[in-house]
Length: 326
Image 1 (cartoon, rainbow, N blue to C red):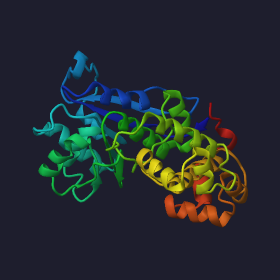
Image 2 (cartoon, one colour):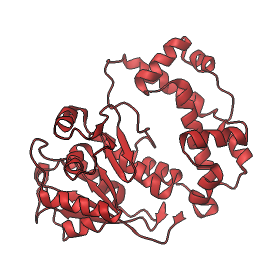
Image 3 (cartoon, rainbow, N blue to C red):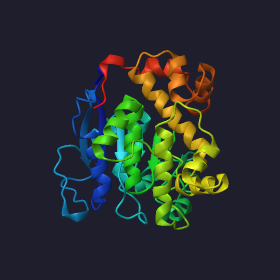
């Protein structure tokens, strides 16, 4: 269990007509106490834009918290809007802008990005939203650097995600930022969801794939994950899949949105992150166990992809015996 001294307050905006799922996701991630993972977890507040706000499905937000509480939170989450073609509530937009000015982290799920854009928080920033509403966002807010191909994006303290399930990915990413990779992975296991999808993974696959492709790659990726500490070449992966190297690369790009080599590097990085968090192994041994071979190789990969040195990462997230994933 990782212990922290400060209670981080997460506030979720509840607007009338908001989609229920997008409201429920941050409630599940941040609103349930999980002392076995991190103690304290989060202080959580549902903040209604108006008393008794009714979300989709007939559910009513009976909460004592309002927009003043939202503006004072450490992290503000704005779920999807009921209607993207109209102006969003001015008092909500003002509260989100005030929270950002105070230094809060701001996250939007799906079309919640329209609230952030209306507040001017996405001007000149890279952001995303559900691909179905990208054209509307781009038309109304042309200063946003919109990329509707990715599942989530972050630019400084501003985070945005695509629709529905991508909101889970974004919220788990926020937990990873706060508590580290091991805690985020343990939480994902509790939620029976993949521990981490990279932010630049595609929102959807343009060309339908045969049903066997996903199963075939699952066998190959499982094989590779069991051997991350060993040299793995493209031809080794192709042989496991009974495909040519070109065919395998095409399948990886279609399903994972990246080449086999890039996918493998990212799995090795995650293994190294967990080892740095959970063990006292030297950097050389962490490099060996995660497949980078040498400390120099590990440091180069961390610098390129995570922009931090392994030793600094350990100082930030290392829990050693204080944390045990369950």
